[in-house]
Structure formats: structure tokens, C-alpha cells
Length: 281
Image (cartoon, rainbow, N blue to C red; front, top):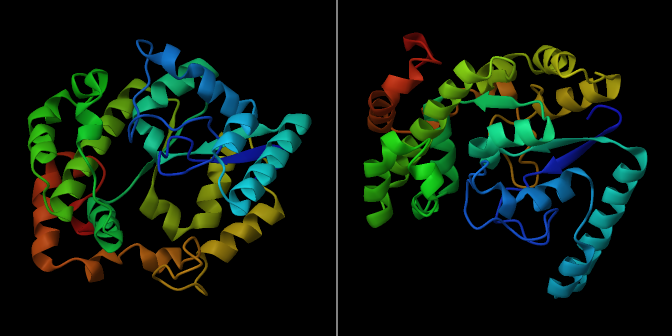
């Protein structure tokens, strides 16, 4: 991390308990906009101003480990607040709320784009299934950004589909919106995961510069340690974030069958062609 910054991990992730936000959002991929912001703005503002929900978390804690985590997180927030550090939120689950976050809190936005086959293979590897009712139960989202996917999402919510089919719909809906963002927000940063993986140090240095962050030797060393060729190509238990990033780019070719790759290619082509050429399949 750059000096005078604070890393905040996924406040929109409703699977994280007793974390940085006072109470989890009601849905995965919570959509916040002007129409419903009054329900959520205070909670998000507390996160980025380091007002940790100490009392409410203590009331919910049940184990010594819970209490230890709360004390640790409170101390971390107090330290960042005292130093007036700039918050850096990493949260792909906040994608649909990005315009509101940028406008309300004057945030700089970095959007990561990923190859559809790589995205689908990750969900297959971890067996991450998705309940599409999380979209349907958000009328502002399903009748807004996701309107063109509504019938498909309704079908998936009614009857669970296989993991590859779920991943295709998720990838299409998210990357369709990313393309909308590219046209509406030219000042945002858009980076392909694959480009970042090929040359992590140079790409991160460019990102730091665009965001006016100091790229220190410590930051460079941390990037090299987590992405260098000395790391395994596949994630290992206990070191999920340390991988040979260049070798990891095409892991999807080993994880997916030829039939799965063809299905992903055909069913994402209308959108994936905006980001990936034929030879990248």
C-alpha cells in the first residue's frame, strides 16, 4: 500500500461478519443510488471516516476470537483516523454502486475487467453459486442497469442452473455495465486483469501514478512477492493471494472442458468482443 493510505476490504461483502460496517447490506451486489441512498449513506460514510461500530459489534460477539478481532479492527481504524489516511476500498461487489460512491464521496474508481473464461473457471473451482434473487429483490437495479437481463435472471432465480451458466450470466451483466461505465465515466481507470498479470510492477506503478499515490520500494517488493514466478501458478491453501500471475492467466484452459470453453465463448461473445480479441481465446 502507498504511504498515508488505509486498505478497507469489501464492506459490500455480506458474507463477512463483524467487519468494518455496522450491519451487512441486505443483498449481494447491493445497488445504491440517489433513490435509496438514505438507507445506506451513513453506514458507508462511517466506513470511510473510520468510525468503527464498536458497540454494536461487541453486542453481537460470541467468542474470544470475535472480541479479539473487534479490538484489532477498532485499533486499526483509530490509527488511520488519527493519521488522516486516505481510504482505499477494494470491493468488486460494489460494482453496481460505483457511480453513487464516486459522486457522493468524490472517490476515484478503478474497474477490473476479467476474461469470461477465467471468471467462469474461478467460480467453478470454488463452486461459488449465486442466488439471482439478490438481483430480483432490488427493483431499482433489475429495472435499471439489468433490465436487458431481467427475463434471464428471473429464470435463473426460479430454477438453479449449473455453475458455468450462472457464471456466464453474472459475467455478462457485470461487463455489460462496465462498458456503460467506460462511456459515461472517461475519467475512471479500467484495467484488464490479464494486462496487470503480465507485468504487475509496471502496471501497478502506472495505476499509482494515475491515482497520485506514492509508489515506494516497499510497494514494489510486495507486488513482486505476491505475483512473481517463484509462486505457484494455482492458488494454494493459506496463500491464496500469492501466485505466479503470468502463469495464472491461462489456468482456465486447464480447469474448463473444451465444451465449457466453447459455451462460454459463444454466450459471452456479444460483450466479450468489446474487451478480448479472437486470439485471446
